[in-house]
Image 1: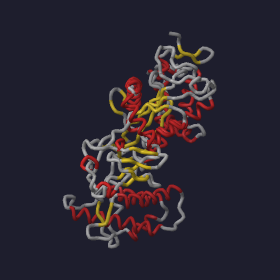
Image 2 (image 1 turned 180 degrees about the vertical axis):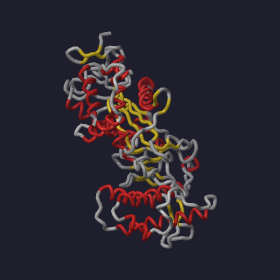
Image 3 (image 1 turned 180 degrees about the horizontal axis):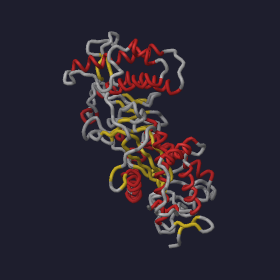
Image 4 (image 1 turned 90 degrees about the vertical axis):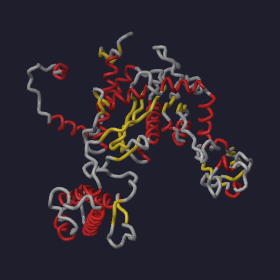
Length: 471
């Protein structure tokens, strides 16, 4: 009824079939502007100038549960062989000829003693051998794209979770489920993009990762991206680098939203640089302050922010020590000009081409060894390319209370934005679609609606153009 009121329809209007929404959603997804709703709201944000003078940006991410059930190795192998039979021409006949470990025409799981480890290992061996035989039979066949994807996924699930059985070299056809989870493991053949991930060693989650960047004082979301939950390219700092690059591209093309002061009309000082601080050039891109928790404290991201002329207000990662309470990497003096590292005992070693300083035999009779390392081969220091920025960040966090104060003031605000994205009515949302592209489109629509709701609460109205009500 709220929607009928919103579109001006009568309360007894029959409405339309729900499939119309699916039809138009698919048409928009296949168009040249699949995120046009999000783009339209961002244009409104730009027109009303709600971000004028606000140069702080906070980044964070959250895990969203996928829309499929997590499958075990046996279920994945059987279901994917059946899928190949459906989508690959002639595959059903090949399966009947070469796959002898299981009857794939029968529904349900195989009838074995599931409490017997030997029976499960024998079934795993039979299924893996069937998958390999089918892949060999289809090798060289000319397949269309859906068939190629089905065959490629079969090859992946046939190898990601298994290893040669004990006392086997992998050539005798004996396999067992691997004793560790494969990195970037596919968890379902129904949605091959869904992944395992962990928010902590104890908390394992399945699904996708929604990344967001927002202006902390207003809560306006300026960019978003949904990715697989695992993988280096999908990590928090990697996506934050893409947010930074997009922000640089946008600010280079537009100066209207940069403003000329470090404070806003609501009295909130965002500690941003003025154009005088950017060299006196009023057309220079805004000098952003990027806020993030320690997950974003990598050398690569700090380097990208520094190279862009922005400031990273990011909590440093805690430094590990090989010995509890012992020396950390900050207790070693690094001379980048001389390319050397000096240990707390005064021993100096060169930095190799791979940015490693090995102290080796120098540690053998060192009086500080008990505080430094337990390794028989001595202490080894591995330095990041932007080690100077990492060290400076740790020093600044310790010696500059203003930095910590700004972090505590602005960084927590992104948590509210994340809660708005990931929950509805106090309950955690579950994604409705399969695949990264469809779920990313959902995230774009959701952030557009959240921004629009935010602006309406601030008095958004249209009178010869979009504007906010005067306060």
